[in-house]
Image (cartoon, rainbow, N blue to C red):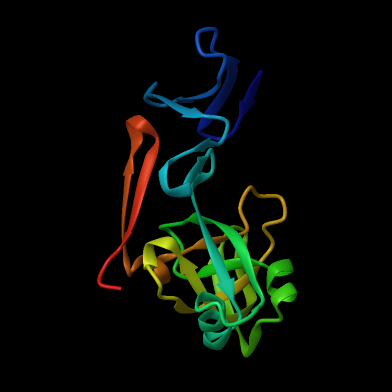
Length: 184
């Protein structure tokens, strides 16, 4: 099976040795080959890597009080468990609109203009608390943008607004990554 785009031609076949689907991308100009796994593989610390990139599990809380009540076992507080794509090219993080509506997150009056695929978009901005296991017992107050990730294997993205507190290392040959909190 062959798919084409402007610079890449995509070939899919089944590897007879491992019976794992492989996506081989042939860069037409320089004839360089890239191999990427097609299916999700689970990595250590509940981190995952899918063909779209590295994913980490986290939790979204409505505010500091809800976060502290839940983490200190002082009652039920609404929160959402999420899978987040680590996106080093994004300035700001985003979460699927269904999760935002389900948690009734506080919305800012103004919109944020984002330059992305298809041009400039005006998006709603919300306030939440993000918890990742790498943060220990701390939560990160965060402004997020509302997005539509309903067709993705993840619920949102982590941008450089979160990654500024982290060290991110990707190891291509083993298709693995490591995310660590720094001075958090």
